[in-house]
Every structure is written in structure tokens, then in C-alpha cells.
Image (cartoon, rainbow, N blue to C red; front, side, top):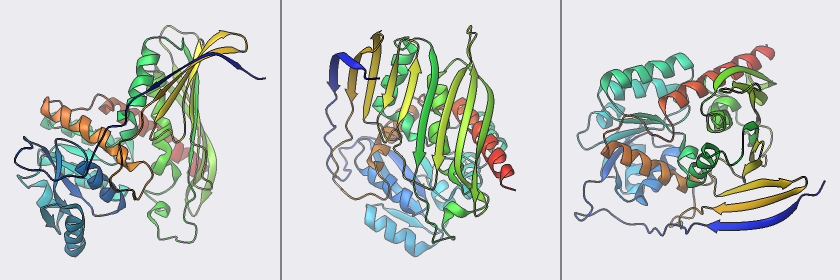
Length: 372
């Protein structure tokens, strides 16, 4: 069936103009970031800090002091250390970004929070729901900022999507569908993706899809999680999952369905279907630049509105992961939260982290259980 577009409106936000620059005495009280790890994702994050007004990377630590020093030189960072504790305890660091492999997230996030240091943990925050809950409880007890680095939630396109849903423009949300996949390095079994405890597709990218449930059904309660999939080298490799939500004052459950895989590079598109229309985050939805909203005008006829939010101009050109320049949205939001004295980021709260951790736990247990 071919759907005709009765009317199409197009909104385009200007790309933020950025240039690579050094901080000077004219930069008033920038948020000073300390980075744990000198790996690939840490490198992308350090680049994004350099293009974010009001932020500066002031220290980095790695298990190898030489690697930390090379990283600091590459990214113009003043201090480098061979011990993570040196960054956590540094008075020159306002907030710690933990970019270690996922199996070390809990350990170092806990150390950072115990030191009273605001902390951003690369996703997943931990490997299990119980550990995520422990960190959040500790942050609450110590009155300290904590955020899981779900940067997707900080993009303007995602903010607009949540506004549209909250305004009821799509009607009651019926279901969401999404996918995310990239080809795992099958010729390198030492790659972190094959680690038995922290590897697998769900702990790597499953949370990008799982977090959409709280966007589509913000006032609903999680009802159940059902997953099936394949296991390769002892970790979940391809997964199909369905999550049901009990919607407030609604007879029908809301549904989130998604596929994630390490076997193929997928389209990576997200659809949220409501009773009055649908919203589509075009690929790649985890770094969303375009939101399309189609409102039903009758059978076979829609009005489509397109919202474009281009990434900032790129002074680097080369990144380890596609779209990493978009980290600057998260860096901005963390800085704003810290300056306002808040302990959570509105875009991705502690409750968001807890629910997604529960979904991820269920998927990993169910799929790996099938593979035994």
C-alpha cells in the first residue's frame, strides 16, 4: 500500500558552529573533566570535550603511565597518571568520566562516589541490576551526581520526540520497533566483545533499544520481558526482545520490540507508532539527526513534518566510533546539571538506568540460558 503525503513541513536547526580551541583565562569556571582510561571511546569523549563551551579535560589516567601521557599529549590534557585514584582524588577534577571496559565500571564508579566526586559512567553503568542499584543508592546517600552515559537521550531530536509524545500528538502509543547491529570481530576472540562476563550484544548495544520504552511509555510500568536469540563463543550474539508495559488508565499494554545483533550492520531505525500517527528516528537512531512525524489524515493519507538537527561542524574528521562528536550534547547537559547543583541528569535519570538494567539482565539471562 502506498501512502501519499498530503502535506510536508520541514524544520531544520542550524548546525552549531564549533572550532577547535584552547581554554584561556577568559573561559570562566569551565567544568573540569577527569577521564579514566585512554582507550578508543575515551579518546572520542576527550575530542568532544574540546569542542564544548564551558568544559575542559584536565586529567587522564590509564593503567599504563606511558599510554596516559601519550593520550594527554594528543588531547592537550595537563595531567596524566598511571593510577585511577589520582584522577578521582585530584582537586583539579570536577567530574569523573569512567570509560574503562564494562567489567570495571562498578568498581571505579563506586570509588569515585565514595570520594564524593560527580561521576559519569559509560554504559552499561554496571553488568547487573543489583550493582547499578548499589551505585545509585550510594550517590543518593552521598548527595553526589551520578549518570549513566546514555548520550542518545541528550540529542535535540530525542528531546523533540519526548515533547511530541507528551503533548499527545501521536495519540496513545501502541508499540515501538527498533534495531541495532554491527559486525563483531570474529577473527579476534580476545576483543572485549567476547568477554564472558561483560561481552555480548545486549551489554554492548542492547540498552540503546531498551531505553526507548521509557520514552514511549513514560508513565507506564514494566510488565514483562521476553527474549530469544543465538549464542556465539559463550555470549549473546543475536537477540529478538519484546517488552510489555502496563499503561496508566489503558486496557491495552504498550509494546517495545527490538532486534540487536553482532552478525550484521543493520539499518538502525526507530519507529514509535501511536493511534494518531507515528514518529521515526532515521538511521542511525542512537545519534539522531532527523525526526520524522507522520500524522494520520485519513486512510492512506498522512501529513509529515520533518525535524532536522545536524551535528556540529567537525574540526577533527576522524573518530573511533561514528557520530561521537554528539557526545558534546551529554557534556553540555552534565555541566548544566552540576552548575545547578542537581544529582541527576533530566535526560537520563536514575530510574531510567534501573529499568534498563532490569531489561538487560532479563535478556542476557534468557538468551544465554537458551544457549546452554
